[in-house]
Structure formats: C-alpha cells, structure tokens
Image: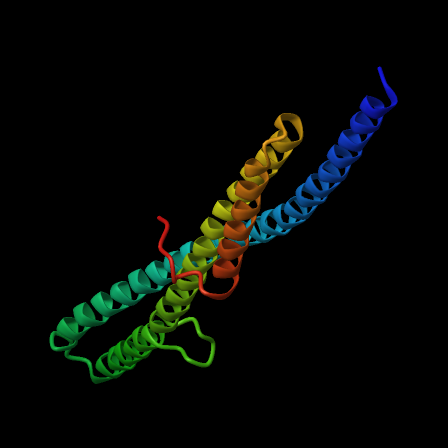
Length: 196
C-alpha cells in the first residue's frame, strides 16, 4: 500500500470518527430527552391513578351519604304518619322533635359546607378529582408518544453508525423534534391533541 493510499484511508477514518462523534452526541441528547419524557410520564401516570382512587373514594362516600339521607327521610316520613295516630300530647311532641332532628340530619347529609362532607360537596370534590385524573392521563399519553419517538430516534441514530446512512440521522433528529413537541403538548396543552 502506498503512502497516498494510507493517507486517504486515514482521512476517511478520521472523517468517519468525527461523524460518529456527532451521531453519538445526537444519541446522548435524544436519550436525555427520553429520560425527561419517561420521568414526566411516570409522574403523570401516578397522578392519574391517585386521582382515580380519590374520585372513587369520594363517590363511595357520596353514595353512603345519599343512602343515609334516604333512610333518614323515609323514617321521618313514616314517623309523620304515626304522629297523627298518637293521642298523647307528650308523645306527639317527642315524635315531632325526633322528626325535626331527622329532617335536619337529612339536610346536613345533603349539604355540609363547613366540613365539605355533604353529598353536594362530595360530588363536587369527586368531579374535580376526575378532571385532575383526566388531565394527568392526557399528559401521560403525550409523554408516551414522545418517549416512543425518542426511542425510535435513538435506534435510527445508532443504525446510522453501523450503516453510514446519514439520512437515518436526519430522521432520528426529526423524531427527536417530534418527541419534544409531544412533551411540550403534554406539559402545556394536554387537551390540545386528542390521542385516545
């Protein structure tokens, strides 16, 4: 092998080495973005599960309050019927007071703003938890799409090193930009694009 051929071979190896360094840097940057989207996705998924449990608990509490209210109202109505049958004034007064207490309890079961545990307040809290769950789930879906784009980008960039096809690096870069876009949508406008 002549000196000229050795020089050309060395220049080609140096050029390939520089190109590989740029591809390796691209892979590292995409991997960093992937780490962020995966972390955000896990957080959103955990938030979604947490808010779903909270909403379920609040709806169960709402149902319990509704059942209590219905039971108390039914007993009060039944007692009203018995009120007319009683001849004793003291017994009537006692029963009337008990009916009034039951009606107050039924009203408290419906609305109890001071504790936030009336059925109306519980329903409002459950709906807020459902909205938070839906927001977190929308974020999660966008982060998952972003993660997929980053992962495919890493694979294509890695294939660039093996094949030498620079077009794969450009596609990897485009996928990284797509992943960044979906990460941004998940962060700032999760309901802007409906995925599911």
